[in-house]
Length: 80
Image (cartoon, rainbow, N blue to C red; front, side, top):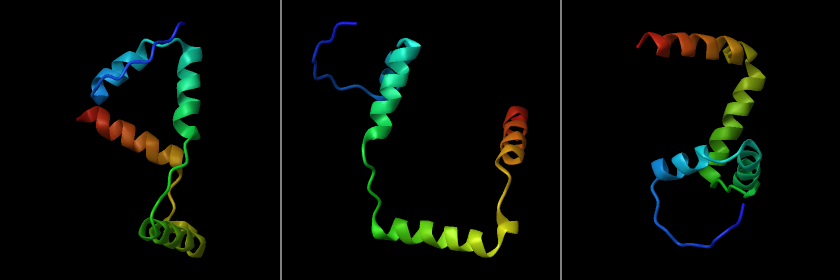
């Protein structure tokens, strides 16, 4: 695929529509690029995350099994 550098204002829907037209290989490359960037969170967000980790360590009963949650969530949303 040839490339062309263009500055165009696009909304999310337009970007998503363009991404859907990519080949599977191009989608993987795009995904790699998107997740390669460092995401910084502020100290307040860090405290929330650390607090949640600590609560999970102290009481594992409060944790949900992801597969069970996803199954229930999918069924719930499918009925809407």
